[in-house]
Length: 356
Ligand SMILES: [Zn+2]
Ligand SMILES: [Zn+2]
Image (cartoon, rainbow, N blue to C red; front, side, top):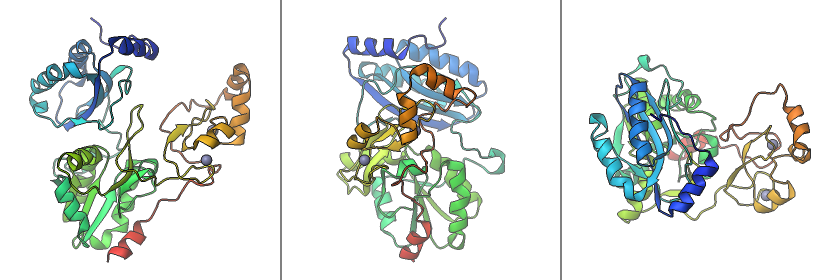
């Protein structure tokens, strides 16, 4: 029985092209107690491979977190399978706003310690004691309240290209890093302010809201389904859109445009631009924002140094990389002293003084 992906990305691309069918990109997560994650994972693989599901799915003792695509024709069968699993019955599926048939090219279901790499010690607090979930309309009302502090729970390279108006956007590389910073900055306001938070699809807020409640915050709210679901509700219910720019997503699409505002700049020339790219030098692969003209001038590289290395014959590049760890991580932190226009996003105190 096949339990692992066997096709290369290229072979898969051809299959998708030849099938000529629309695919649906979606995501979901659920905290639940899964007794035998490996067994559960194998069952998912067998069922989903048959339905031509592609994506990146994490299974852990604490639950499941999946981002995937499947032929639109198979959606009902997929939903039926999810509903057959008690804790996934009627789980909310975040359907992507912009569809791309090639958002995923492999089916990877992995057993992990956690469904999100949050670096938190779970036993220290109860994850199920989470904040109040709010939909788009209630969220809009809450963030107009001057007693509200709105916090973006994502990382710097995500909030850089899009965030809610007036949100605090901690300048952090990781989720774990943001929690104590936010707690410290808001410690005088644990009882008098509404702490309202959001993230991409809601999963980070599940943990963060439980964490802040554990730390003594009294009024903790979280945007249900995150920016993805917010955008859907705003469109379907014709609500005011308070999100500016693009929503960064963790698949090959990289982002979904929510409003026409371009709030970021090319890190090399400073012109308005909001498309992330990875430095073409394989030894660097830095995630950064580069406009079309800088792309051309720099040959897709983040610095003159990388440009020179990238221009060398492959064998020489390889020799240079010897002994240096593999940095082939497309979501590498995205900071470099070479990036003249990379903004410092940390504005937590400014926001607080404005609101009080
Ligand atoms: Zn530029
Ligand atoms: Zn580089």
